[in-house]
Amino acid sequence: MTALPELVIEAVVHELERPALQRAARQLVDALSTAGGSPQSATLRFRHSLAAITPSSEHPIVVASLLREIETQEPLAQTEVRWRDQLLSLERLRIGSFVCTVFRHVASSERPSLVERIIRLNLLAVQLSHATGAGVIDIDRIFSYFGGRLLQTDYRLGGRIATEMAAHTIVAGILAFGLDDIIPPDVQERAQKVQAGRLHQLSAAGTG
Image 1 (cartoon, rainbow, N blue to C red):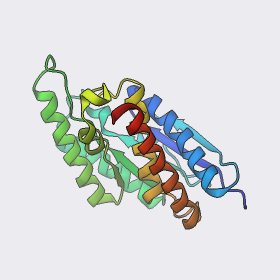
Image 2: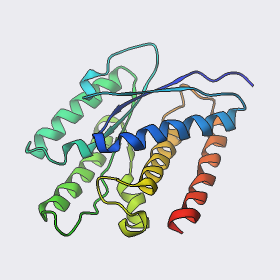
Image 3: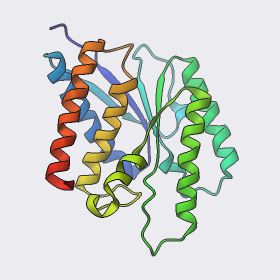
Image 4: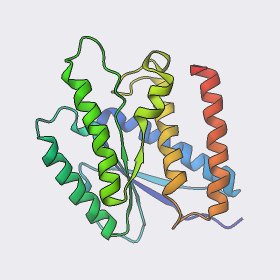
């Protein structure tokens, strides 16, 4: 088999999500190595903002999370303009990007407005996708299917099961839409099947 090019993932996420991104990078390497029949490598870089990502010859994949906006006092309209402008700048540089939604499960002791804030941010993810062509990694949809009690987590994605599930969701999104310029389609298809099998194993072990 022909060696696959190294992947570069630029992550603009909340610190709480970093373990999930680290696990996602390993899952992606494992899935592509299995599918391609040769070792795959990947570099994961954490960035403070989308604006910090600059043009290069590496064709990176950008994963950005709206959890970073959970505590800010910035009006949502301004948040939308900032994210849209930065995502469009990446699109003009032909850098593929993904926006992660936020799991809407919040502890009863937290302020009620937090759930409303999360819902509005998740709607913003869809709007940004339509406006910029960025993909959506819908953490909220997958996590809501299983539920916070089974996953033993909340919007902060703490815990081993949540880390694995978030990583799987990120990798599934990347494999579905983010590698066409880097990885041959047949390898992507086989990697998707590998990843789907791991979701079944994870569900049986911790959430089934």
